[in-house]
Length: 432
Ligand code: UGA
Image (cartoon, rainbow, N blue to C red; front, side, top):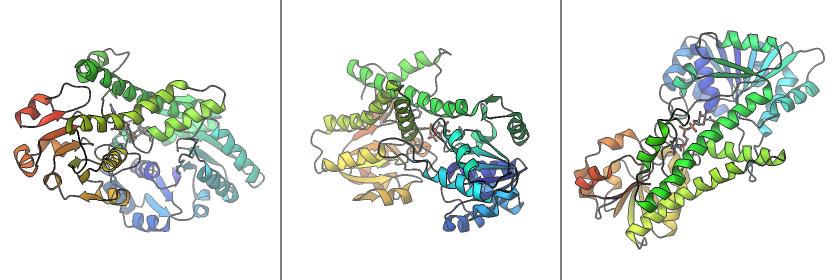
C-alpha cells in the first residue's frame, strides 16, 4: 500500500521504516529541511538500535523516501499517518497546534479518498476535532475517514515492539477504515482490537498512565522498605508473580522520565479535569515520581553529610538505557539539585553526551566511567546501561578519593559492592 507519514520524529520514523520493511511504499514528511536532508542520506538524527540500518535498506530498495512538503504526498497515499509532536503546555494540557496545522494542510491538498490516522498520542475526542477541521477545509465532494491507531513502542526496542506487538489497536468510524488497517497490518501476527475512535484514544492514555502508576507504586513502596529495612526487589517479586499484578514495571528507582509518561499523565489528568471527572490517582502518581528524584538526593546528603565542595561521578544521563534521549530524564533535576548544594559533577553516558551538552551547565563530561570517577568522593548511577555491569571496580575505585556508591537504579547487589570496598546505597534495599 502507499503510505504517507507526516512528522518524521521518533514515532513517525520508526513507523515509516517498519511499514516499508513490511513491503509498503512509504513517504515520510517533515517541515524541518535539515532533517529531511539527513534522512535522505540514510542517517537517523537520534539513536535507536537497528533503525539506521532499516532506514538505509528501505531507502535503497526504494520503498522509503523523504520529502519536506505535505502537498507532494497527500494525493499519492491511501493512508496518511499524523505523527507530529503533541507537547505539554505549562498547565499540563496537550498542545495540538501541530496536529491542527497538519489537518488543515491535508484538507487543503487532498483530492481523492484517504484514511487519515492519528498515531501521535492525543487527548480523547481529538479524532472528532480533526474530522471537523478537515471537513470544514476540504474541497467539496472529496471523501476521507479519520481513525486512531495508537503506538505502544518503547524507545530502545522500538523496532521489535512495532514488528512484534502485543496488540494492534484501531479506532475506526466504519468498515472501510477497518478493512484498510487489516490489509496494512496483514503481515503482523497480533490480536487486533477494533473500537470506536474515542475508546482507542483512551486506550493509549490509560495504558501509559497504568504503567506509570505501577512504577510510582514501586517507588512509594521503596520508601517504606527503606524505613523498615526491607527489600523492595523482594517485595515486588512476591507481588509480581501473581498474574493479576504482573512482574513488569515494578522496578523502583529515581522515577520515570522520557517524552511520554510525564507528558501523557499530565495531559490525561488535565482532560479528566476538563471533563469534570478529575482522575485524582494520576496526580498522586506524578507527585510520587517528582519526589523520587529529591529522595535520591536526600539519601546522598544523609550519607555524605555536607555536599559543598564534593565531587560526584554520575554514570548514566539518558532517561533509560539504549537511547540518547534526555527528555524529562530524572538525571536533570538530580544533577541540578546536587549542583545547588555545591557539588561538582563529572558525568558519563554511553550515548547521551551530545544531548547532555546542550542541557547542563558546569558539568564535566568524561570520555568514560573511569575518567568520570577521577577524584570523586562518590559515584551515582542514574541510568542502568548494561556496560556498567562490566566495569572493573578496582580500577574505578583507584580513581576515586571516596568510596561512596549510590545506585539510583538498583543495578547492583549490596553484598557484591561491599566486597569491592564500596559504601553502597540503593533504593528501598538495605545498604552495605
Ligand atoms: C513508554 C511506554 O512503555 C510505551 O509502551 C509507549 O508506547 C511509549 O511510552 C509512548 O507513549 O510512546 P518509553 O517512554 O520509551 O515507552 O519508555 P519505558 O521503557 O516505558 O520507560 C519509561 C520510564 O520509566 C523510564 O525512565 C524508565 O527508567 C522508567 N521505569 C520503567 C522505571 O523506573 N521502572 C520500571 O519498572 C520501568
